[in-house]
Every structure is written in structure tokens, then in C-alpha cells.
Image (cartoon, rainbow, N blue to C red; front, side, top):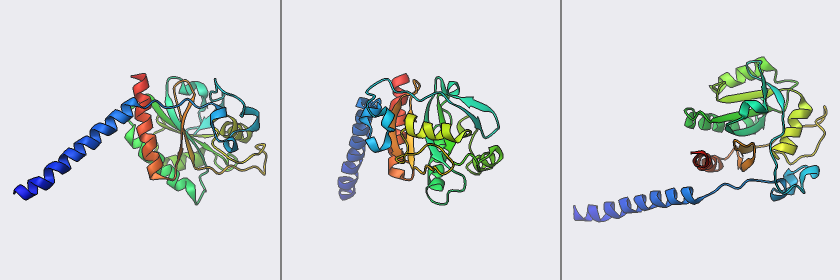
Length: 218
């Protein structure tokens, strides 16, 4: 019995210590507010690379999976995760959507949180196609919005607002974006973090950072 206690007690103390340290680290952390000048230049459109402060997600008008107009005003008072995908993607997108499904489940009861998934193939991903895809991942339309619309607008958002894509282009017929990046945006529409949407470890960090962001608004 003594031998068992000699093993169990230190293990319990270690677990408690790790939990306390994690809590202290999380509470002491403040998420950066990203300006274009802070971000890898490969991700930033040349026209934005010298901007050192005041960057916010640009205005937009898109259509969601229910066929309704959505604008940046619909995200006033919300922090959210944004990504770029397409429904027929056979490689990274299913993993990304599965991770977003996980995030949705974790924050389903957080009334201040949303997810915004932009299709990069709006010519293919019509409203009915997006709706079917959303249903596939059990997306709650009040929580997880799938958006289609003008291709140039979506590509400008990816490159000049969210800085989610490394490729250059004009949003024309031959242009294509394929990115695994998730972007965390706060209630002021400022970028607070970048994450690999195909990596469970990176999304684990995103979940922690969402909690840190929650604390800023508590």
C-alpha cells in the first residue's frame, strides 16, 4: 500500500502542478493584435506590407448557406474563426472542416463566437451545394456560416484582409487559393492569431487562444 501511495501521490501532485501552471500561463497571456507589418511578407499583399497598425477585416457582402445576405455587420460584437475551402477538395479541406466541427461543438453555447468559412470556388459552390456541405458537418447556421459570392471579393479578403494565402493573383478565372490557415478575429475585426487547420495540435492552441480572447471581453 505504501509503495502504491509513493507512486500515486507524486503523480497527483504533478498533475495538479501542471494544471495550475497551465492556468497561470493562460491567464497571463495576451494575444497579439496583428498588423500586416508583423506577418510573414509571403502572406501579405504587397499593398499592405508597410501597414503597422489599425488593420481590420474589410467590408464584405456575401451569401450564406441559407441564401441570405451576410455582411461584416453580421459579425459586430462577435469574435470568430475564418477559413477558406471548397466543397470538392479531396485533400486538406475535409480535415479542416472536421476541426471546425470540433471547434463548433466546443463553443456551441458561447453566444459571442462564430465560424466563417469562405468558398474559393464560388462558381461551383452554390447555395444548395454549401447547404449540403454544411449539413454534412452538422453546422449550426447561427454558429457556423458558409459563404459564397463574388470571387474577386473573396480572394481579396483572403489576401488583403485575413492574410490567409501565400499565392498572388487577381481573383480572375485562372486564379486559385488553397490554404490550410485558420484566422482568429476579435470583436473589433482585428486579427489575433493564425493556425494550421489540418493540425490537431495547432487547433488545440486555437482553442486555448479563444479562451484567452474570451477573458478580454469578460
